Length: 289
Image 1 (tube, rainbow, N blue to C red):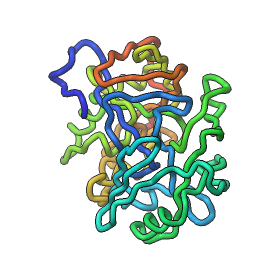
Image 2: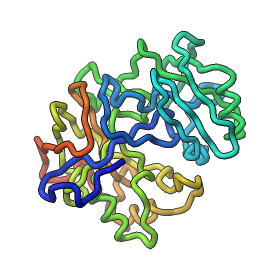
Image 3: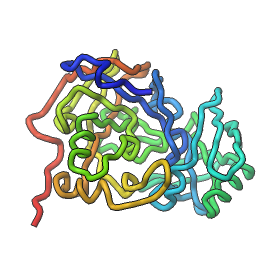
Image 4: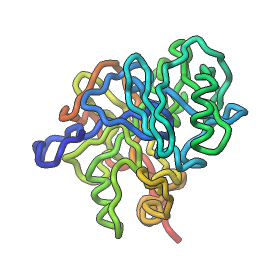
């Protein structure tokens, strides 16, 4: 569920989508109310696929991961579906075999979820892999260069607890594309509407209900947004178009990464209070030669 444009006051930024992705790089789940814990939204990137050496697997290498659809089944369990596969329920192994896993430059301890579910994923993706879960007693710290406090941590997301995009930014992009694309190409946690395009680039601090969020780093986009999340087919857009006007030193920028101060809940339709802004975006566009 999401908030339609006509449902909101045009002058007030509001939360229009809330999404979690229980298994990193698999399909997301849209929520009306999202609970925030130490790592971000509960259930978000709690699980991850790894190769036999423990290195993380995403849609970058396996676009078909987009076709794996989880549903929340209570107490951390997930009901999984994928084309041509028998549906399966994951009941989290909290005391299973622990192993070291690697995600970007980080390593952390994760709990292997067993042979049956590993076989299910391996068969669908046609590659050897294991499903792991980040245990409650493990901590994966946020990069200290961007952390707000020493307590900041994250699950199996690439680096930060939240990704935020404004609806106006996608609308601006779609106005430049021959074929518009949905927001799910960018896999945000929080979508905000009733703003100008790319307003999120100048935000530094926002508040939703009683939770303060710090905008700490723009999101450099990999090839995942070029993957149709309903078919797993990959093309050149939207990166081809984004590169013409959103190209920075570290790549194409779209969306902002957030760190939160408090725990609690936020809901669709919540007002987004802009606490602190800057005169310019938190990155510099690269001049095209």
